Length: 346
Ligand SMILES: Nc1ncnc2c1ncn2[C@@H]1O[C@H](COP(=O)(O)OP(=O)(O)OP(=O)(O)O)[C@@H](O)[C@H]1O
Ligand SMILES: [Mg+2]
Image (cartoon, rainbow, N blue to C red):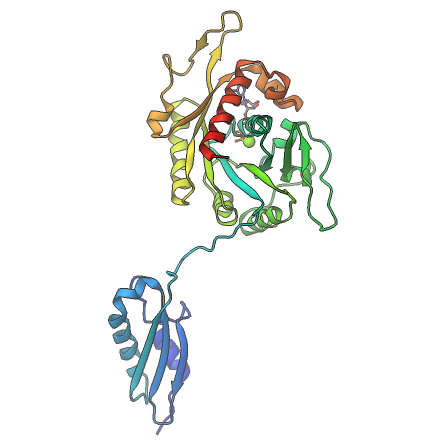
């Protein structure tokens, strides 16, 4: 009598789709043992993902039929065990375990003031007595180094780890430190992800209360990769009161929610203008008070006024909370930082 071909078996089993998991048994690598005796009797051990838990009979039937259709096969014995892990589960790692409370700072669109808010909030949290780090994860347009006025490059310690640069009480690390002005930003896709995880692992943060992570605008791969590689405790969305910006920030918020990152709230930037003479608040984009929080269904962590001192300070490398600590803008940042600290319970 003829022999049973293993290749035929694998070909047939490749057509068996695991119920609930939408993948073939072979591609799932669910075959854990395959014995064929000289009479053509098969004893097969299968591991199925959790999705198939309630359809094991159906799966067994499909496997039996597939095997019986192979030439020279006689009896078939199927033994299925269930893996507790569902198929398609993303692996989560924590590459920066020495940080108590990593926070992502995101926005739907560019230019709303993410880097400005990250910079000033980091310094404000440090002023409140916390140990704070700031990571510029905007590979496409890093700007934190400029805003902090950092010109030097980070040193490497004996463990070959990058030492963040300390300025204004904050440990700062930016991909911008490692690029000179003419480095083309060609790091896209997988290369970029590799660079990011490598970068996360290679920085010696030490013990930190907060690590603020300034993201590039939008909802791309960097956000996803960070959420998988850092145990992010919260996200803050930065927006301006214009409706267009709000529409975009909704996307950012729903991305955080999909990644199971708790959204702490929104920081509304360029909310109003404080008259230098009379001190009155003028809401430029709306009648009086803005209702960003209501529109998004999220708490507003702070409203930051428009002030030319912010831009000037940012360009000069002297953040406004350092340069003008008594200004209304700086007070708004300090109040926001207090609220964040309160919410995070540190
Ligand atoms: N409240 C403010 N008042 C005045 N100018 C501001 C304010 N917030 C930010 N700016 C200025 O607006 C510009 C954009 O801000 P910033 O770079 O922080 O935005 P961003 O969201 O990080 O942008 P990108 O998407 O390019 O990373 C900068 O020149 C900054 O100085
Ligand atoms: Mg930025």
